[in-house]
Image (cartoon, rainbow, N blue to C red; front, top):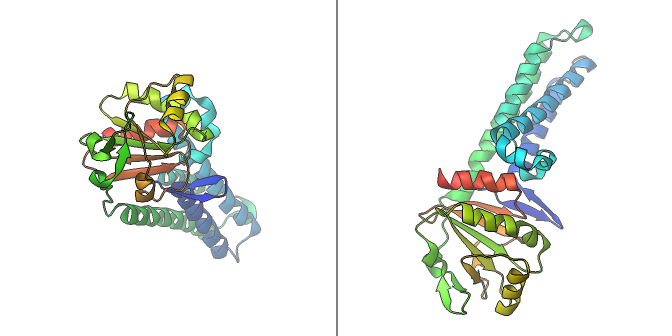
Length: 275
């Protein structure tokens, strides 16, 4: 599950934080291991980690190349959490083998310590990823039948009515700028993926205000409901708007994303949802 930490106006995904922490701690550990080595080896350590970071991003971009080609600007938007950390660290490891130091920097023991630092980052990332999955997912489920919402006609209903297929639940409000930016993209995804149910859960605004906004924005949303009692917001411990919850057909929460989705992140999540 890719939840996030909200710090003021900033939304930081746990994946991005884990990536930064594992690489940072690995570098610090390598710096300690090289405390008695030639200064040139410290630079070599740093270059190996820079190679790892670049390779991790490049590998992710290549994996989702079609989506990035449609939105090239997103290649430099690393806030989407798009990193292939194991591949990146492999790239850093290969750098230590391919680029041999010369002169005073020729020190096989120091090279092995740099490789140990890269391996440490990999172990930290794998362990952190496993811990996130364990805490997120003891197969956490939303009790869909218990979450009451109001449909477009003002009648009470529950999210259980939309179950049985993969489900995307988007929490939004008309006053939310990021919500407005991502809504057209979600509307297109709704039309392009009939095998997935999209539910747009407005956060308790007046039905006439919602209808006027959707008409002005020319958005034809199916399954538009209101969370008048904030039950859905409380169930997911809402941290900010927009928030998108991704559920398997059996009700398992697969991921929660806080903040506006990038086109690439949307494609990634949809692919994970139907595989």
